[in-house]
Image (cartoon, rainbow, N blue to C red; front, side, top):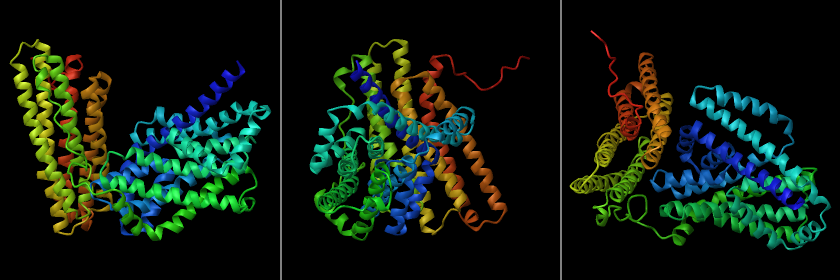
Length: 553
């Protein structure tokens, strides 16, 4: 019974730790996603700036894996190169070590303050950013609370007769400890959570430093494995970045492991407790990797090109999937409709590949990315035609009124998606070309407004896909509410832009037409995705047929 209670308490503490680290990451992405994208764009001038951007982003997100996925997406669209992306990841690994340093401090007294502050911001805040900041603050409080729970849960282990042989074996067998740390970080999908748990064990006296250090080295390798696993089906450039980072992790980890075997590190100089020495070692290890490998990111990128052959396929580096339209089920309306929905999802993914890199094309010349967008648009047009013809053929059978209505709804969605593709290629790409041709730049305020709007449209696109699949009424309502929020963003950007024109801001004057047309294009794209929710809300009686007031004469 005591064993079951111990396992339950420890599992609950670990689950809370994993959930809270994800909670912080989600809050930062939702609140400052556009700003993070701007940081990466700003950093492209040198590898040193790349690494600084990685440090800042990972310290905020508390995840080098999240940063790896972000820069991998940029690299897949051609906005960032493999060399610069590797520099970002070297900095990101150090950034997570900075986050671990802070979270491992003895600041448990802050938990009530953080919970109250974060709760009030999240529950009472009206602005989206305020609510997400509240989420982040509460997430930090939960991390600290989970570490305290881990300490309380492991208290009985001190008197366990089985503990000493295990830790003694790990202290003597560095390779086993190294492999165990890698496995733990990979299973957790978070090196931050794994190392914080190791530090908590050290603080409780359950894990000697001799065993903890190789575990930390293994956790760093596990972090690299996570990125390799998550990018396995992505563009070849994305896979090169993740693999290059893993090469750094493994080679650095093995070198440090050999050093631990033959040299007694004077960690008592940097900290006076085993737990602090553990996290300080983690920090120093990643700082050393950054210092050693940053000058060699160019040959490292060349090495990854040999390890991961180029894939010239368009549409994000993945083979064009076969159509989901199954003509064998046309006589079964339910299965045929599901088939058409899957094809719409594939079509939406292609639209996302087109829309994601657009903002970067305003500030960088990338003919390959522009050509890729145009090629994908051809596939979108073909998919739209195929879906319309498929549904039209299905409609020739015996359909109930509800099935016929839903078929028309899906046809309308296909047409809307095709229109989004046209807006991206015929409007936004034209504007990016005009911007570069005239060598113009947006004002800092104008650029921030546009990137914030672009990020919000991408987020709403994801929500619209959820609505398409689930037909959930609450999600549909939330999607329609987003239309009002985007309208507010458009109006605020419009008014702020006019104010800058009135103040005579040179950049705003030069880019006025491009700025306003970009805002209108993004607003129309958003409106197209919002329409996914209308049939669901109308069916539920939550959507009025007209906005006009019913004035009785």
